[in-house]
Amino acid sequence: MMKKPPRIKVPETVNAGEIIEIKTLATHIMETGNRKDAAGDIIPRDIIHTFTASFEGEDVFSATLGSGIAANPYIAFFMRVPGPGTLTLTWLDDGGTTTVEKVPLNVS
Image 1 (tube, rainbow, N blue to C red):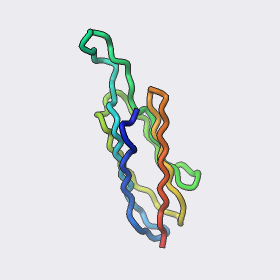
Image 2 (cartoon, one colour; image 1 turned 90 degrees about the horizontal axis):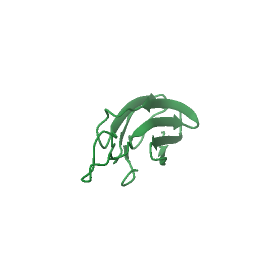
Image 3 (cartoon, helix red, strand yellow; image 1 turned 180 degrees about the horizontal axis):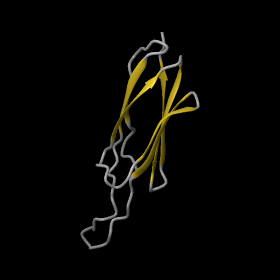
Image 4 (cartoon, rainbow, N blue to C red; image 1 turned 90 degrees about the vertical axis):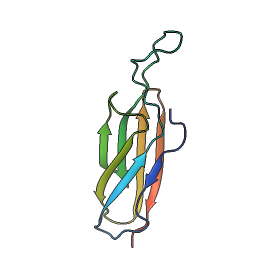
């Protein structure tokens, strides 16, 4: 489970047709399931396993993550902005938590 909302960085304004970089940082422990607690019990696996980004309902980026990803995963990707709209970013983890953030893109 994420400790706090993910950080998302997009340009303040963009032009239609421009390629922009989107950066995200999720605060998540990314427990692999290979460690033990102080009592010797295995700590259950809890990682973000899927990240998707869509713009106005159309997928623009997706990633499948595994247990080799570090805690607090940073994801950056590029996309061409077709026009004004909302970017929807979704993180799914093993604990059943779905985190969704929506970011409007200011297109000039």
